[in-house]
Amino acid sequence: MRLRAAAVVAALAAAFVASSPRAFAEPQPAATAALRFDVKRVRLDNGLRVVMLADHTSPTVAVDVVYDVGGRNEERGRSGFAHLFEHMMFQGSRNVPRGEHFRLVTSHGGMLNGTTSEDRTNYFEMLPSSELALALWLEADRMKSLDVSQKNFENQRAVVKEEYRMRVENAAYAPASIRLQELVFQGYWPYEHSAIGSMRDLDRAELAWVRAFHAAYYAPNNAVLSIAGDFDEGEALTLVKRFFGDARPQPDVPRFDPPPLAEQTAPRSAVVEDAHAKLPAVLMGWAIPPSHDPENYALRLAAMLLADGESSRLHRTLVREKSVAIEADATTDRNRGPDAFGVTVKLASGARAPDVVKLVDAQLADLARVGPTEDEMKKVRSRVRSGFLLGLQSNFARAQRLAEMELFRGDASLLNGELERFLAITKEDIKRVTGKYLVPHRRSLVEVKPGQPAPAERGERGDKR
Image 1 (cartoon, rainbow, N blue to C red):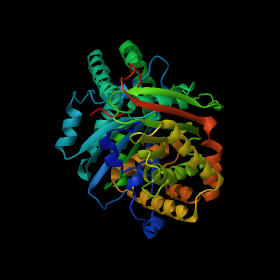
Image 2: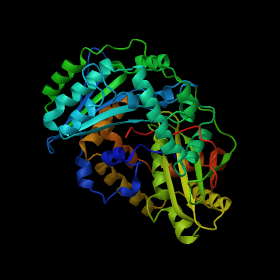
Image 3: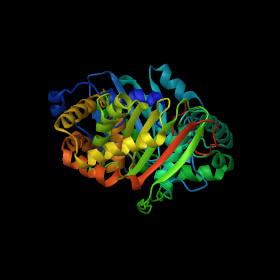
Image 4: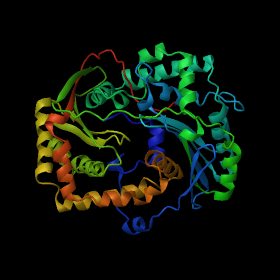
């Protein structure tokens, strides 16, 4: 449903099970059964959580620093600050002049970037294993002494506004995706607004507000440092303590304690005219339990049954049999808090949106009434197994996944049981959650009509480049 991070991150992460199900290859059950990560977890005196996973099969190392701050932590009228700092963090610190972070990493054979979501902000480097110290030193320096100056603030505010124009105002279907997010989480600010913020809030932002936001959240006791790849754990921990050990903790990190999401009792809808859309489209969304909830796992499998490949239910019905669509997709946002289940259908020439909605509703009702077949369950489990392996092949993917597991669920080693949580889902589970959550009165719908765009005011998350 929601717009995704930039392609560089998707290419590196290779996407875990719910991220890009169509990329799944054939399963490798024997390898999956033997896959167990020997995760080491340490907490420094200043509160920094350190996660390490050594693997000497490739001479590279990934470092990922994830801060527990995202769009959900922002105040009304001050949206987009987490995304702004995704950019600000590359503008220099006490020992690293502006632009030097990029130069040092790339000149030593590495790559780097950062991403922002509603749930967290992360910064990462991928380097030859001999350059681990460089990555750790760079991350520690900006954690301890970021240059939050008026000059850097004004410069990066302009960059973010340009990114907004490119990714939202001038991107087909982007305003509709954001409008759907607003409808699904209507009245629930943490996820109702997108992490890129709004042009109005960016224009109104003051340096004092930005500095206060940084002081509140960008501290070692509000972060996880993850290292994965070819390194010695003892040597790495010595470096971590040397570079990060004197980072000062923030004793008063604001607590995130929102009220529960109110239950939706009637459908919501909107129409978005989009000058950049070549075809009409229908976007549907439903609020569902958080990503760690067992029912969420079942709903992720339901998304795969509905739209994973040409044999999936929506593709078979809408594209092949009825010829009312050229493309159908289903996914979840994987939020820490209340999550969203989304279906997107791009209509074929001459198709009517109400007819497409009825066909989607019919498929959901059938899945809720009858449930998946044995063949469908066999297929989805095979793709989950292979997707789990492919999604954790690179050192960066492992570093990011472990950091988020530590941050979101309190223990990175829980990754070892993640595949089993999916495989434990039964067809009765899928049948039940589909009938419980994916029903018409809980649905939000946005119809996209090619035409003149309405003034855009909201945006999506992304990276700086």
